[in-house]
Length: 173
Image (tube, rainbow, N blue to C red; front, top):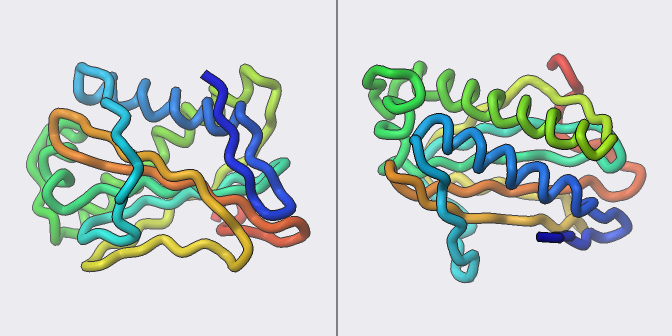
């Protein structure tokens, strides 16, 4: 399966898109016991009430990975991942979603390494709220994928930086 997302002045290599998809599938298979099902992206809302883990990757090109977990999915998914209940509005929910994004990012690094692509990742940043929308820099395009797991829907978004611009956080920050 070859995928490529075109971005103004910067292209997201198909190996990145494929590596992210493989990492998401592997991680959710490990957590849930079944592979998540790729959804139809038509009509995927731009915003949601939920929690989003965001990790930046620096390399050629630089890009961000945003993992969106709607409020109705988060408690059941986090319980499956952490092994105990965590209320949606607790600080622990943000910590666990950050750790989940970090686990996926680690697998992304491994997948990209297989393709001889070297990237560095930042620490996760997490946002939670109503009508949360992950915006991209002007002129950037993104690749969005919606998914379904036994605990409910989730999505991810990849966004690249325009040529000559930085995106997101530096590795280790």
